[in-house]
Each structure stands twice: as structure tokens, then as C-alpha cells.
Image (cartoon, rainbow, N blue to C red; front, side, top):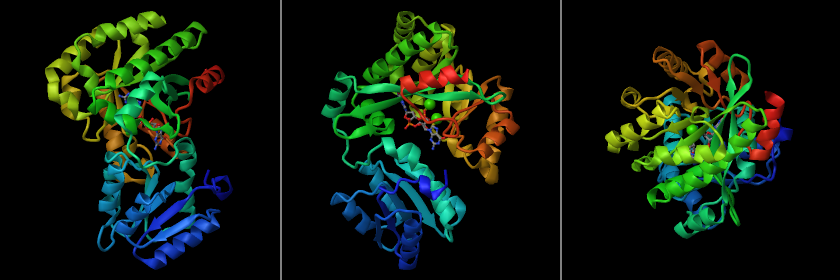
Length: 397
Ligand code: C2E
Ligand code: CA
Ligand code: CA
């Protein structure tokens, strides 16, 4: 994957750094790797002006310390503009600062590809750029925020569909489950990632519509897989905003019945601190879902959106360790410590542990060493459409 020849050279790259030695060096390295469309920019404000003028890079390298608008401020502006290209941070700053800025970019909804601590080498850059082969090819770069009318249209025209990512049993590498991830095939913008429209849908009260479209689609697909003798479980993401309606357990039961699947085949994944906004109602709905047999997973565990208090108060059956603590944890003592203690916590509480963001054999080996039950990640497969997943399941079970 880090082989330069496997990279897509049509990718436009922008390097933002006030140190012209760095931009020149980066441009040379990138050209060496086969990228000829490289723009050098000396300031955050300059980069933003270029973006606003319609010059939108597929990948943006961003220095953190710059005079005027610094990298952290630029990240915030990129988030506000819903920039969907990849972002790679570069800095001579302490590794922890880099990591916290990366986390900030993620929270702002950006597609953070990684961090490079100066001085860096070309193979590190190549490794990071290789990641866009997974993400970027299907996700055209855009900066215009999605409008409410567009979202309504997308839902009405059933453009939002379910894609699937395999969940792998660590003990034998078999595919034991799939996670449903929403994808919006927009007529002019191409594939729009869920983070760009889920937040909007939550804000304008359309999140139940999204759940309906995606979940029913997925449950029918599960019904077909089970009927053809493929045994998998299915994980579905629910927004905390879906937990406002007491009839949700009945609604999900109806969809299961229609699709011919049992609630015990389904795991509901919940993130976000919003659950805490109406804890009593969330407890009621989630407890009733558990009574009906649905599994319940605490997603992105450890990111601040999911807390120990939630784990204590809600009837979870599974804990998903956020990819921030999984990918690269073998080389990062702090991530490893969190990954390890999360897996232990899951074991002590009798929960299934799932490691997210397993991208390398090293990540996988660590998950196995720590006793993590299941993993998902690019090492095995990104989310893929139903037809591709059917083929995958036929081969992998
Ligand atoms: P999530 O539930 O944490 O899903 C995992 C995200 O990580 C997915 O992004 C997935 O494509 C990505 N991913 C998987 N493996 C790897 C890996 O090895 N490395 C890296 N860097 N990333 C990996 P995606 O599909 O863009 O979804 C983003 C988030 O949007 C999801 O995070 C979930 O919170 C939300 N989401 C997705 N579909 C739905 C949905 O139908 N309803 C709701 N309410 N939220 C959804
Ligand atoms: Ca999830
Ligand atoms: Ca997650």
C-alpha cells in the first residue's frame, strides 16, 4: 500500500506552511511520489482564500505553527466549510499536541488522515497518502455545505443507502458480523460521507427518516443473507436523537418482522453525550430494546462522547474501542494503555469488545494480544455496497 506506484497521481495536494524550506521539500517529495499537482501556500489565510476561490485540494497538508491564522484555526475554518478532503498535520511540536489537534479535526468533522512530526521522511508521507485510496476515491472533495432541500430530496429519492463493513472474529479471522454505514449517492456531488449529513439530519429533525431508509434497507438485506444460509449479525448506528420516541422498540420490531430477522441478530450502536440529555427516556427505550433481545453497543468508547457513566447506567452488551486508541497503538504507549484498559473493562463487565480502525497487521496482532474479541478496519475492508458484501460473505464464511 505504501508503494508509490499504487497511489493515484490525479490527486491535488496543497501544502500550507510558512517555512518555505518545508513546502519546497514537501513538493519535491510529493513529486517524487508521482503527484504533480502540488500547491504551496505560506499562510492559513492564504489557503482559506484559495479554497473559497474554488481551488480545492484532495489532500491538504497543514503546519500548526504559522504567523497570523495558525493551523488550529485553519482546521476550525475547514470544519465550518465541511471540507471533505483529507487533512494531514505537520509540525515540529510535541507528539501529544499533534495528536490533540488531530482529534480536534475529527471532532470538527474533518477527514484526518494522520500527523507527521518534523523532520519526516518520504515513506511516511507515502503511507498517509495511501489511505486516501480507501477513502477519497469514493468521496469527491467538496466544500459547499449541504442544504436542507438537498437532504430532503436525497431521502425522498432513496439516494441514501446502507453499505456494510465486515466485523472480524479475532480468534479465527472469520466474518461474524457487518456494521451498517450510511452512504449518500448524491446526483451531482458523488458520495457524501455520513458525517456531512447525519449532523444536519439530526439538527433539522430528519434523523428518523434517515434511520428508516438505512435500517429497513439493511434489515431486508440481512433477511436475505440469513435465508441463503449466511450467518452474520448486523450492527446498526442509532443517533441519540433517535431515542426521543417511546415507540422506537416497537418500530424496530416491526421492521425485523417484515424482514424475517430476530432482534438477537441485531446490535444497536449508540454514541454521543446527547443520551445524557434525557437519560430517563434513553434508559427506558434502551432497556426495552434489550428486553426484546437487541444487543446494545457503546460506540467510540473513550472519546468523551461516550463515558463511563453511560456504561454504568445503560444496559450495554458490547464496547467498541474508538479507532483513536487502536490504530497505531502498538507504537504509542498511551493509546495502547487506553486500548488495553478498555478491553479489560469490557471483559470485567461481561461485554463483547470490538476494536475499530484496525488498518495494519500490527494493529490486529495487538488486538489479539490484548484479548479483544472482534475488530473492524481497512486491513480487512472499508464499507462496501450490498452486492460486494454478499460476495465477501460467500467467500469468507
Ligand atoms: P462510526 O460508527 O464510528 O463508524 C466507523 C467509521 O470509521 C466509518 O466512517 C468507517 O468507514 C470508518 N472506518 C472503518 N474502518 C476504518 C479504518 O480502518 N480506519 C479509519 N480511519 N476509518 C475506518 P463513516 O462511514 O464515514 O461513518 C462515520 C460516522 O457516521 C459513523 O462512525 C457513525 O457514527 C455515523 N453513521 C454512519 N452511518 C450512520 C447511520 O446510518 N445513522 C447514524 N445515526 N449515524 C451513522
Ligand atoms: Ca458505529
Ligand atoms: Ca465508532
